[in-house]
Image (cartoon, rainbow, N blue to C red):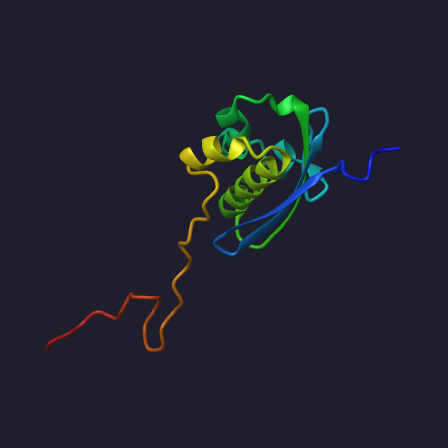
Length: 136
C-alpha cells in the first residue's frame, strides 16, 4: 500500500475564454484522455491542437510517455478547451515537481489568458458593430 504522504495524482484547474478544464496528471504510460475519449479522437486528429496540448511536456523536455493525463473539460470550443487543458497540465506538473515552475513560467505556460468575449450591447448588431449611418 502507498504511503499516506505520496499522492496518486496531481490535480489542477485551467481556464480559457469560457472553457474550464479539470486536469489530473499521474505517472503512467502516456495516455491523454479528454472527457473519456483519447485526445486525438476528441480533437478530431488536429495535429496543431495536439502539439499545443503537449507543449508543457516538450518545454520541460519530459517524455509524454511518463505521464497519464485525465481531463474533464466543459464550455467553449476546441481551441479554448485545449488552452485550458494546457494551463491545467502545466499547473499539475508544478504540483508534481516545484523545480518545473521557473521553466514553465519563462515559457509563459503558467499564466491564464485573460481575454474574454465582449458582450453584445443593446441597440447594436454585436459588441461593436452598428447599422450603417445615412446622412440623407
